[in-house]
Image 1 (cartoon, rainbow, N blue to C red):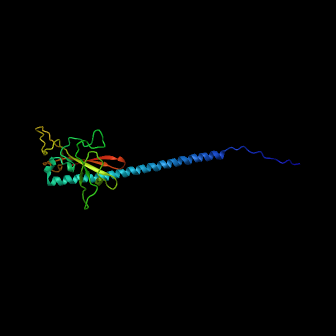
Image 2: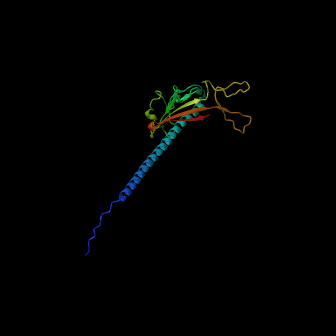
Image 3: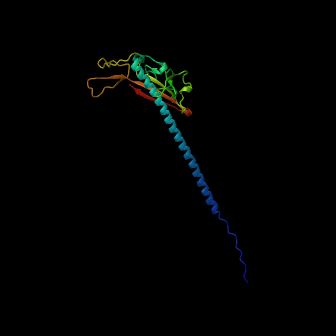
Length: 219
């Protein structure tokens, strides 16, 4: 007589559940890494965009200041011996253009000016816009399409507002009130050409309260 066999239930080991949990953890970590990667890429792209916008606005301001210097130097150079607040020009450089207490602002008393965001007819150089209140928000007509506004200050490298001397008397031991740049052509051995240098400082204010300063020297 055959006795029927009954199978006893096996004890569940939970191996499938353990593997599923591991896969879930791996997928979660991969998702977090992907989100962080996307966020970092977005931040890098935003920073590059801000940098390009800042540089473009600074180039416009530098060109505006340069063109003003060229025009005045050719037409009425004697006017460069006096300050011109409406054009952002200082005949001396006795004061630092950037504030010592707040490195994002102009120093007190600086005769900087805003730069218009457009001009007509093209090609043209935007006009200077005199400041109204120190450290005030930029006027609407100085903000370009990308949200950047530019201001500049031109400083002559002299310690006073007098007419600069183009002679350096080494024998007498006298110093020159202006910082002269020797622009002599090296092929001309017996000639000397000294010129006054000018420092142009540009302040760019952009989106997200970004502030940048650029400087260039001309002579």
